[in-house]
Length: 197
Image (tube, rainbow, N blue to C red; front, side):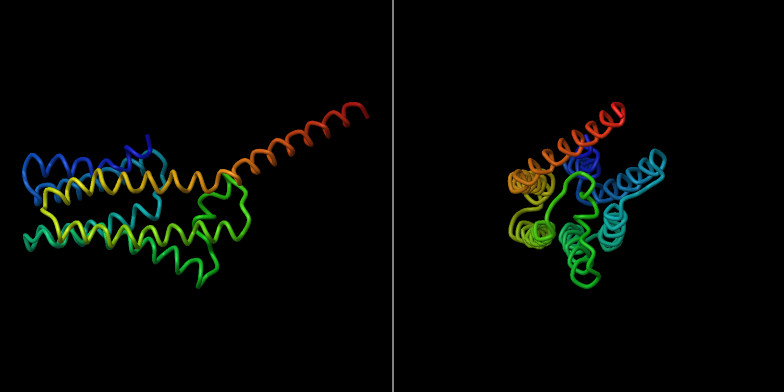
């Protein structure tokens, strides 16, 4: 469900392009991103930093697309977004010793420090590659192809990457489950002992 919500502006961008043109689609994407953030604020009173970055990038590059009537700017938007996220992950980890992937996921799983670092690095590399792939498609294929890639290709690559991450983390997720079960059993034993005493 969250994936569909995250894709909301991209889906509307795709539909608006198919029904009108790239400039109408860009305006729709900007409006949809505002609506998305407004909905999150009303529901949770909290917005993820990644969504603020996305809003800033779509405002700058989408706005430039509309002002100059040049599709080149909106083609650059996904790449700039991917590279910004990758840069944030890199700078946070290597300059401030703060692994943002660990911050986001440590409540769900227990991993060795080396694995957290590998996970963080893999996301950085993924975002760099995604930025490059977007530019390759945007400037070597038709606008129709790029718009389709933006929705189906980029989403598909993201899903494949996430599945690969889950497979990579499979062993550690099992260890985490065992640890949780053991901790639960120990807690139950403690309660039983207390009752006996």
